[in-house]
Image 1 (tube, rainbow, N blue to C red):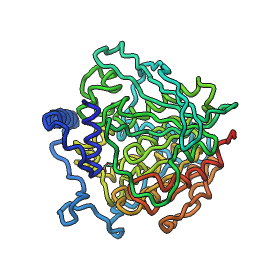
Image 2: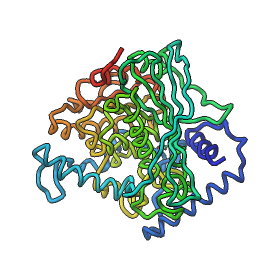
Image 3: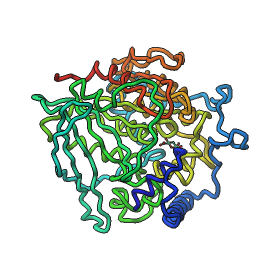
Image 4: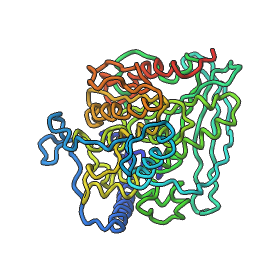
Length: 450
Ligand code: GCU
């Protein structure tokens, strides 16, 4: 039931209302527990009140989301990814790896996404099914896996990570794999499919046509998508069912941790070239994909779709969703408790780091940042572009190329010159129209074994 509810929360947030038949009582109790957890964190932080988030639904509301570029940059100066906390300039790759990168990670850990505990539970992977199948008439083999999370530290919670891996039926050498953070729909339901702007095959088929495999990891099997779930899931196992401390990990890091455990499995699977595994995610899972890529340097490439606030968009922007939204009861569980401070008494200007430095943590590995146009203003594509531009300095220091321009491209134009890539597609809140562009970009890095 819990999974259904968290899924329902997601759907409601995403503006759909097809799930009205789920019990009101279950929703109410979940909301009560979430509010209790949020209040507990405010008490730990000695905060009495927060600024409200932007209202994305009512343009005449006093706190209506801003979509006027002239008002979008109240805090134009960004922290410098290449200046150490002691004011010294970072002038070599060695200084980046040994001094500056750890400083940036410490800030993201403490203030934004939370710390992954030192001793996270072991995961043992079990293949529960291997099936021959087809994807768009292409013969494939799919492995269905469960990652059993060791819960001996707190046996009342069990976590079984759900993962699938699909490769071409006839492969003779290990292949690159693109892993997606997948949405799982309750039986009998499916999201209304987003308006396709082109008649492309599904992303899975596009990936297979390159000779690569694909994997799908279900983040909600690692950690629920609501504040009530913070005493459960893998966070609950490590907290032993207690409330989080302000710098404990949130759901984004827990989902990213799950992706890293999946990569551990790929390192043992002879069909996978584990040095060529990419990560992709959309929206909240776009945030999770960027966090995965930033923290786990084993991931080779990333496709970050419509990640917005809490993902690739600069926190210092005032356009669409704001820090204040993510600090509220519906979304704070994605982040460290400390992040809430920046919605009152502090402001986004006080954040020690910003999204350009999260992208910079991915350097020198290739990252494609994606957003949509119609109906996707909430994610602030320009704010994500700006963060990508400013991450470029670190790519350059490491001998790679950033976006190679700071001029915002017309919608539909792909910037693919560098190791950071960007495209705002003409579709809505979906990665679909950007898959062919991502695959073109990724083809420069991933070896096709066909
Ligand atoms: C909401 C939320 C976004 C999130 C999105 C999603 O719109 O405000 O931050 O990315 O849900 O995951 O669909």
